[in-house]
Image (cartoon, rainbow, N blue to C red; front, side, top):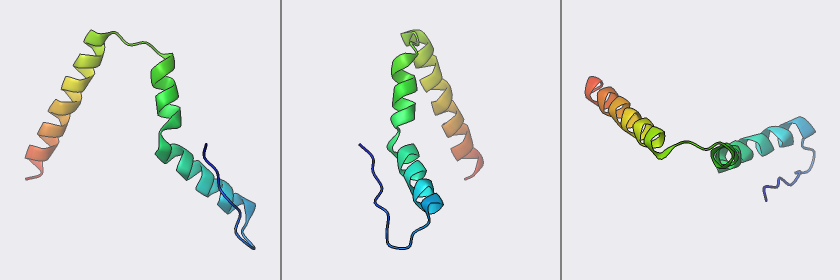
Length: 63
């Protein structure tokens, strides 16, 4: 469970911003979407290969 404690004299908007950042970094929403939507193993493997190829191309272009 993600929680944020309010510090003394802290604006509620600032605390909410910290909470949102923690929530995003924890990957809860990503995990939820991954578990709710089924992707076929062949599609998943294709995505992994295309991401790897993109990383490879990017790395070789910038070196």
